[in-house]
Image (cartoon, rainbow, N blue to C red; front, side, top):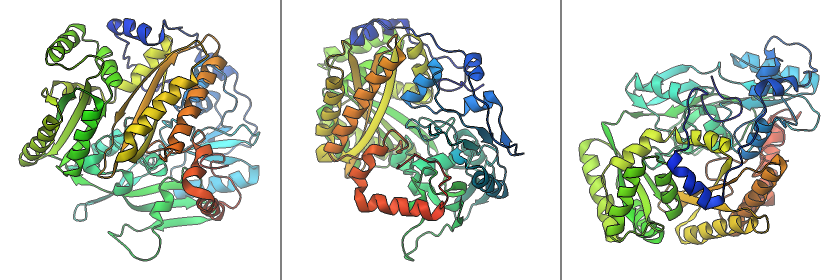
Length: 531
């Protein structure tokens, strides 16, 4: 069963290796294992729904708890401690667009708001009810999740937007195709959620971001239906798909999506390369991506993330051998950086891409070490979020943030973010361990994905305050260095205060006007994207 207060299936445990505990203590100190509230305690605290009965809506308290929050850090603190300030008044499970229209009518009659819900994996507060006293209904789209059409000639597939990643891929692979969109939340997130938040998959270098996949579909709004035909291209005015992408449920509910698909690749390889310094690795990956070899992924870790990756791998003897072997070749333990190179395609493609990527890596001091580390990464890429559960239970908190900048600004922005996070913790008596990687690379720039690890405090409010200090400081650093406030996580609640710095006053007015046109009664996902 899905965990109600953490990540993933409750039958999957990814423990913190005992060999990693000394590293955690060295980085931030001894953990403070918290006491978590039980599911039964939280269910007992759920208030009465206070809404008229409706055949599409469940007011079961347990159901409302399971849909109350996503995966943001404030969500975790709320769920783990039982301090949930607002619950959805009900959970709707529509099976058709007619059901959604009925929910619009019900919301108007009762004064409720509607929150579109895909997989519940948002890390910035997309699915949280507003604490304003107005009842909200979470609209769970899991029953609108079928493969509706497959056009082999045009390579287009139409799905119900509530389909989750594994089911979508299974349906396509059975026909010899793939979408190739693998965000870290792949196991639980949905196609509609990917579109609504402008998601990016781990192998975007080959397959592209979700906007490259999204060919058309349908958005059902309170004001009517927006039908987006899957034209290969059009010069007939602004592209309305771009309005739907990143709309975060403010315009309406995405019910169907037509996506561009690809034939299944012949094979894949993931190679590891070590660099003496992050700066050398940065130069190498920029030259690689600008040379346009047919790669599917480049992921360059800082020295701190490389150290954390090896420490949390759990293979103590193997890790020690790696440190010793690389050390003998002049790769210092605290400085060396790991690059994972993903190659996807037929054998000639693999040979060509491997030759270009490894040759340019060697030019900048890179040491290719074969596929072992790459195979470990691909094996664990959807397991690693489970570490968040076990770290919390050991008394350690971890969160992420990300941005993207042009190449000239990547290193200054990364240093500014790391510095801001450390500075935010000054005077608290606590330490923070910050590590990062570049995970999505483009000809003109690269995304920066930062994680920060710190201790859980005995007082949950203090834990949340430490997080807030670091998150706000890092967000200000991103804005000051002209980075986007989000490359792949969307805006939600947490990033909304910083959106105008990117869009400008006129841009924000255009977004608000679009929402007002589609949702004149203000019933769609209030408080997200903008206030």
